[in-house]
Length: 213
Image 1 (cartoon, rainbow, N blue to C red):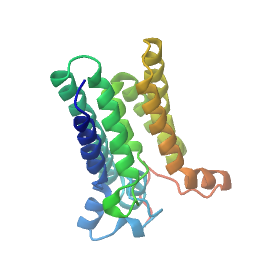
Image 2: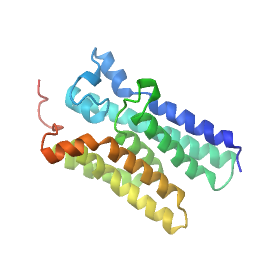
Image 3: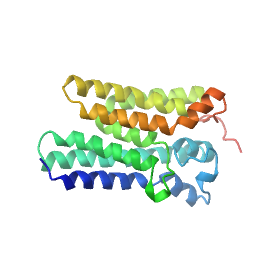
Image 4: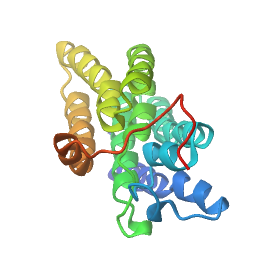
């Protein structure tokens, strides 16, 4: 079994990677603090609302990479140095740590994004085919409905359920538990959006019409 400090180091480094906010970095290059615009959330959907498709998509790709790279590296490194059981599990642990760091970044006063793009990156490593299909379905759903928060869960729910089922039927319980943590963490981060949905006050995310001035 690997020494405990390798586990701790993986968790801490992945969490710190999650602290990096691509949305704030991009928006400040544009001379605006995204936290003062739109919904005030430094995440992909607010980037789409405030800056339009190009920068919104760029932010999504960067945040997905932020989730995918620590997950993939932890999986590869633990498989290489500690043969067998640890690789994929540590990948999932690293992925969860990134999502926690993205939503609750200590370096930004615990005011982060809502974790969907980073979660998509984690799922692309753990469950690539289902995640890719779910992303396409989510893109079409967003284009038709303009409901950003609902789209977020259209994209991540199926991969989480499918991968959890695969792991559980193979007698593995850790990854389903970690994925459940990611799901409920992102759901909690969207609590204000859920309230707005019920009140019919959530701002739309428009993909194929000219961005409102």
